[in-house]
Length: 460
Figure 1 (cartoon, rainbow, N blue to C red):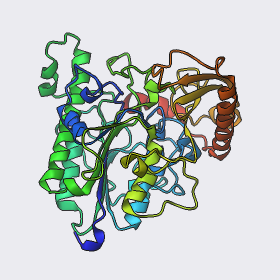
Figure 2 (cartoon, rainbow, N blue to C red):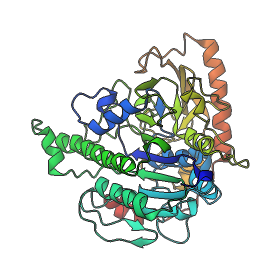
Figure 3 (tube, helix red, strand yellow):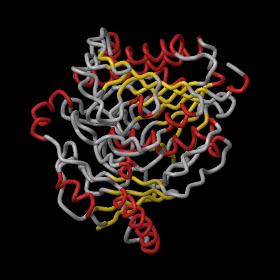
């Protein structure tokens, strides 16, 4: 690598529906994740790491833009065919890094547009990726032998093997042969595991042969399958002798799904699951390895979020964040030096389609406030109905809950009545921020919802 380009490489790895309690290094004594456990011992494990949202598309939008995803109009997961998408006006960290000379690559789940690989919406290349090997949402028809990957605009047809292996194989090929070797790189790896529809190779199901329930064996094996693929990715970094010059983050897009077909994900000690703004829906594993800059085997209790990625990577790469966009995240560089993160905007989440009553939440220090919203209960599914958008644009905060997360990580004791002064201050913070987000969020055009409903078995 040329002397002027000795900036670190960057690898971001995102699991799909991996819960806070699903890894050995986060306390799970059943699921086997040796590669991620070793990775945690080599880096910094974050105990208070959050996704930018309670489900997939908004979390990915927040991670790439550094902005609360409702500002960008990513209100919910994006169905195939939907007009909802990450607009060209949004500036992603991939855009910024590519403009600054980084080679960029996305592999795996994209889920930031409905009209995937169609010319009327931005695709991964439009959001900063030189090379992409992606699916719109899930690997289909399952993780086994998927047929819906697209490489740089060209469908690749059916692939042999399992999604995690295929995703990492593409990432390794690009690192070894596809990128210019005289420039630093940004690699964004998005696993489909352990999202449904789950398919797990026999070798990983056999790790759980003593478990009678086949769905549980498949779920646990699916996480081990992803862990093995992650291990292969890290071996490739080592084989290329890039460990000492590469920043790596592993995290998840939201909490565990815990569905009827696969009710086995774990949020550990946290309350609730994916789709909720209680901790189980948004607090996720987060592990950083940056040799020489992050102490090996460290643990941090500092609250951090997916929206912090863009400002952090800009600081690492020595480039300016976009000046014409309001950013909600903060650089984590002080954290690596043992100092607190300096925030101008508190950590904030919104999900009008939550299965739990609270629809907005804010964390400030050890304290978290949640609130319900006025208006109708919104139906599950993609949120492009006109009545849904009207509800999002007109909702007002109603009742509040207040928790001290340092003392009560399970959110079992609502302190709203015991802490009136704090409740008043934080509710005003929440009201101002939620109002600003509501005013900025765009409205999407109507679309053919019945046509989607007929195909949702494949795309949900």
